[in-house]
Amino acid sequence: MRKSFLRFIPPITLSIFSITVFIYFFQVFFDAYLFHSFGLFSLINRFINGPSIQSLILLGGQVSSLILKGQWYRLFTPIFLHSSLMHIFSNMFTLIIFGPFVEKLFGKTKYLLIYLLSGLWGNLLTLIFDPNPNIVSVGASGALFGLFGAMISIAWFNRNNPIFKRQLVVFAALALFNLISNIGDQSVDIWAHIGGLIAGILTSLVCNFPSAQYGKVKTIIRVIAFCIFLLPFGFLLLKIQ
Image (cartoon, rainbow, N blue to C red):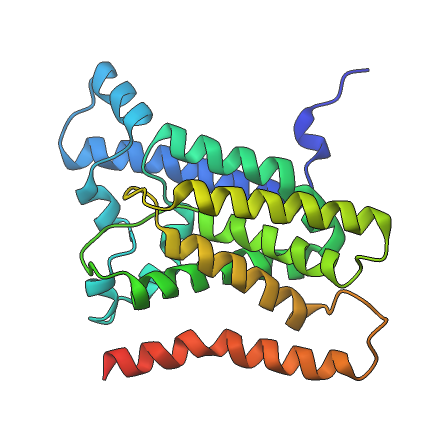
């Protein structure tokens, strides 16, 4: 008996995937509506090459200058927006490959927190450190790097286990390779990637310290992780003032 591939994807990963893909189709049709262009060739072109910059801004793309004017939702909405078919394909492919593993390991609620908070934290770092306040940035990359960070965290604190030791090597190599390969690429929001990776580590420690071997040290590490997690919000307050 044949079974649908989607049945093997756990619910939160499947929900994130479905919502993100739906939003991409919405982006395409919204852009067509914005420019009154519903021809078949025009829709296909938009689907492949992505919507216009105007659409990305209107739909909530990350624009630091607008966030500082009070449009805080732009720290969250870019997680579900994408700039082209290749952009969303690469991100959703990564989600489908690695998301189920992380979801099963952490559970639905913690997994969702890691994904969303990593995306948010990555956008915060872009806001703080990117020198151009008018660049439009979108994508789930920061949230996906958060999944890598969470796995690196849990594998590190359980590295005496051969299975986790292999996972540590795999996820650390993936994260490092992606970060290095994107350095200098002006089309990539490197701060979102770095922020997402760090936030995944911090959130996993705060939500679920990944080992029972450390006794009271767990509490100290969780408190430190939580304080570090709050730092960008403090920088944001200073930047606003």
